[in-house]
Length: 505
Image (cartoon, rainbow, N blue to C red; front, side):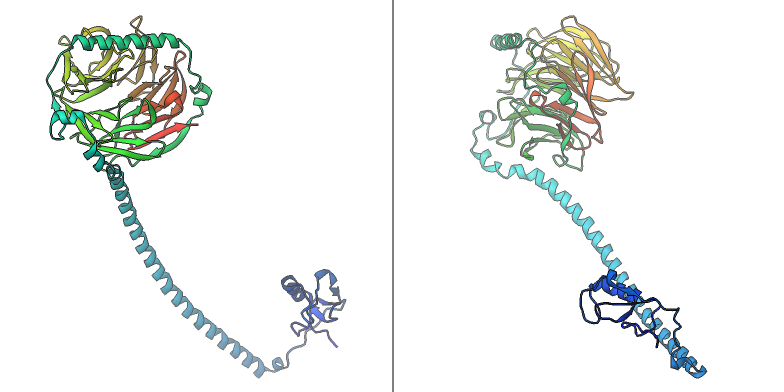
């Protein structure tokens, strides 16, 4: 009598017996059953593969089925198998056709969904830009109606004053400038050469990386942020001017726009944040300088000091006067309280457009850059050109005085930054940059320890050694503005890629 598997009812090739049920099984089948269930299939008692006992038998010969012992029976079996194959093939063809229809429908739905997503993405982008423009205005309507603006009243009926006539440098103004310079000089001597304890150390500064970027401040239709400034009393407040003709006040801490100021008819190339008042200033190639109220969200004065593009803007240390330069070859000194131009001067000997302007920290002298590569130092009280620094090639693009009052950094379209000693009136260091490097912005930190260069990329140098400690290339366009936070706790930049970026540890 041959052994028969209790599961398949066939003669096993590798028979084994279960000590739990005393039944014979094909080892292959019982192992699979145990792997899935862990019990004996006959009585459901626990069973493991190790418990199975192999049965030693000679190689079994499986008996033929009775139905396969004659030719007619074999032919019938083959016919049955053929019929089964045909039926299975027909079923598979039906399933394939159904699957094709479902796939076609799914592809159509996917294509429609992609189109809807693309349209919604475009609408979301447009809505975000509109929200960034309208959000700061929501709470300003009432404030604008209630706030009392003395300069607006002077202009009449809430309209900004439009002032262009010159008043002249009164003795009391000159005395005010002198008194302020004396105070600043005294404070600088008290500080001496000591570096503030809160200032970020060079080794920490070298570890700075990009921590935030904001691309929705200005319109995407006319991309580019052209100017940047931080509020001196709260460097979390950021001021930008864009190619979209708008001035934007942004809160770094809250990561939201405080105000969007509209009024210029051309791009905004210079902006300044007043250190103690809720007021900002902007200049544009539309030949105007505008004074804006942040709380009111409106322009309170328009100063027309020039007849061509205004190229530079600088606020005097008193916070009461503005210096401006223009392509009309003049620099102008204006009173921000009255909006009147106090004096307007040009160098008739050279007759060249001015490209930038910056006050010395003491406020009694200032520098201007020209289109013919000259840097001119002026005495404000005497309104005379007291020194010239030749050496650049091409128009001067940016100038910056160090807080120590001794150094002047200048950049031009010759891919270099030059450092000048104002005591010896000479160039003592030239930082040669890469070929075709565009220098757009220069700025010292408040302690005069670091110098930042913005242009093709961002580079930070440590003063005196003039060695590079940082280099950022995150902007995809030319960097147009760079500024240090308080004690260099962070660095910020703007560029033609329409983004405002922040860097810190």
